[in-house]
Amino acid sequence: MKLPRKLNPGAHRESGLTLIETLVALAILGTIVVIFLGGIIGTTKAASVTDEQTMAESLALSQMEWAQNATYISGTTQYTPAALPSSKDYLNYSANITATPLHSPEDGIQKITVTIRRSGKLIYTLEGYKVDR
Image (tube, rainbow, N blue to C red; front, side, top):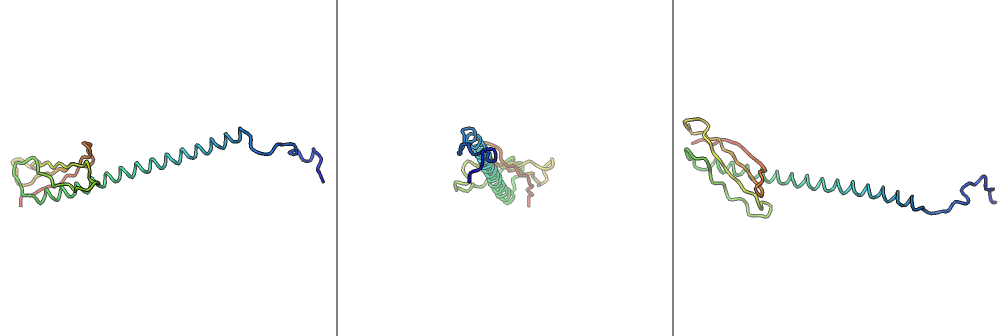
């Protein structure tokens, strides 16, 4: 039994999507994709920065231990850093170890500063003390 037109208002409607509906759906999908990709890019960048900081901290700690175990040199302003690991993870990293006497005249205690750079950019600084034993 067929309903009269008044009771079935959608009877003459065309089925399928109109151009406007399709464009709205594509715009919504495009927005979701852009937000998703932005999140992935942000997460990747944050992970890279964290990895760089962790690597630099590890290098600084090993360099500090190296300097503290080296022979005490009165009046020096620098200690030669230990060789950096040769793996690709440490590529473009460099270390510098400076020393300043804690008191004047020098009494056998130096403030040691280890700086770690990557491609010339300062990444991490660590300070400690060296005692003439």
